[in-house]
Image (cartoon, rainbow, N blue to C red; front, side, top):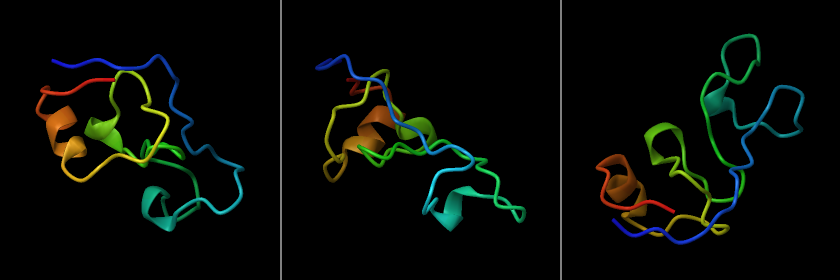
Length: 69
């Protein structure tokens, strides 16, 4: 397993401006984890954020436990 960086994910939180509707419930509360920086969500949230958008296929590798940052 590859490991690269030591950055914390910056997850969307209630009260943030422009929260993606896909991660909110009917009341507008954030209900799913999604990083503003890498775009990883839920199982795609590696131990640390890579500090850049995830490349094609990296999310699947993270979910499968084959890649970590």
